[in-house]
Length: 338
Image (tube, rainbow, N blue to C red; front, side, top):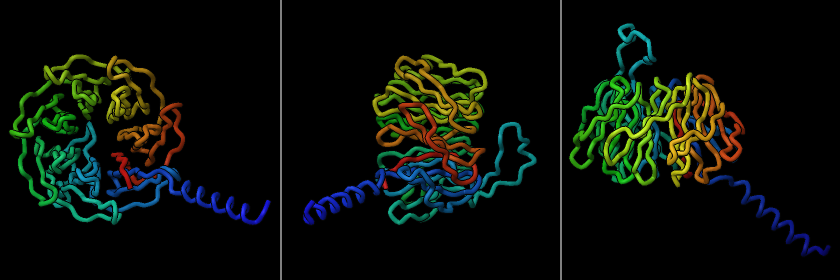
């Protein structure tokens, strides 16, 4: 082989190696409730590459409307798991309440803006408005994160939890753990238009891409309520089985698969949301809660609270490829472009 050809082959190999080393063009961000920080995972290396302090009880996590920031709900209210006598708990530190803003490009926490009392979960509108469940206030707050202003607070029922925008961004669906309901809020009028009875301790809401159905995880009933969004009523119920504690959800882009974490049931359920039937389930980790799909939908990531790790799941084979150590009591999972 002549020298010129050898050099050309070596250069080509180097260029290919350089392209391969860049890895996936996204990062996985984990909000850690107990340690109050954000873990950044490189999915190419399948390891945590950084942890950034945020504040107390980091839970709900989403990208900003423009994709430049990561927003995380922070709360100074003490941990109060089911069965705990709240009269024995220390008073809340409301100075810690708010929405933390993390800048992706600068890779740092910028500031904290008001988010109402004890913010937990939220949704982000196309115009940047943030819709936040405030457990202490039994309502959902509309917040302008740029100016740090609470615009409205709408009563939803005791212990509001999951907050999700409809695909057309006209309504917010908010669950009430205490009341076992979902409140539908008209964004334009900032008014509740319907309260729908679902199961016990509803946690999260996810929609079919066309918005025709909403799926609500009922933790204490081990079921999903399926809401007909046209009629604003429950159309069906999907039972997951004894011992399951359905929590988080992730819907495929084409609406053909719904992935549901089972909390203390340790499983991930794969559901056909159109047929409203369970396709399979398998164990993924210790009390999986938050869940998200990779951009190519080949991987799933679940936050496993008690074991302080994140499971990386191969969607095609339904196997856990790796468990990645993160912060204390991981809660939410966000996949975002880097």
